[in-house]
Length: 316
Image (cartoon, rainbow, N blue to C red):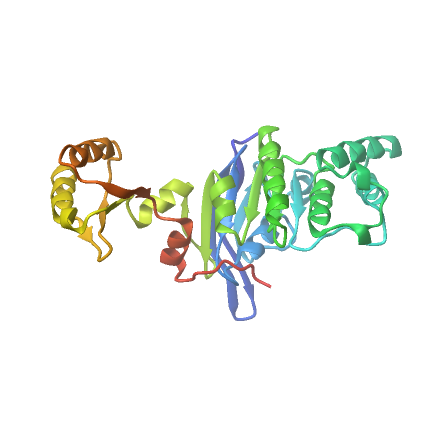
């Protein structure tokens, strides 16, 4: 089996005059989490639909673990699980009944389907709600059940399309733990998200798609470094000491310091090991500080720099 879970070359999908996906290239290693970001209508869900064999590319090619998504569709479908933006579970059935049906559809015997359903209900903290009507489920419980259903076949590749949208912070954190455990157990995960902090917390790599094209593909830290350096921010207690403090910082870092009206000094800092030298030098001359902060660019700043958009929203 190839060491790439996903390999796509020049994927194109058009809807009328709209080129929704315009030459997307991807290489996603096995056993990793890839986050996909992009503004509204960027082409994220369309890309996942092509990779998951739900939509045929108009041009280009894609392989899942070496199997062609167009020529070996059935084999690809045996290797993937998909949780979309909207729950695929049946509202008229209980959690157990939903999982039993999905298990039977995957070819399990009734006995094995029930065993697997019980395992998943326990894993997703739904055992006590196994026989409750879904009308009694919270949004977080429904999302967990939907994810459980997509895992019945133990797929090595899982597509998660906004898995935590609408969840409260506690349930989101629980879902993050579940996603990490999937990878620890050998799965590869590709997820789209509207939460930049979610991509930052979970993803080994992040793909940014804008107007149907991949505009960036790197680790979270790599993306942050691409739009700016780490900066040192120091606030001096006495305004009379600001210029002296700036001279000391400039001498040690060999760079220009910006001074704000609030006595805050800011300077780019490539070598964070210099922080100790700065603090020692300032203390030796009696300069008192009220705040010291090392600040990296955020994914929000990365996203805005790459797309000119301050929000991540999934396409309709």
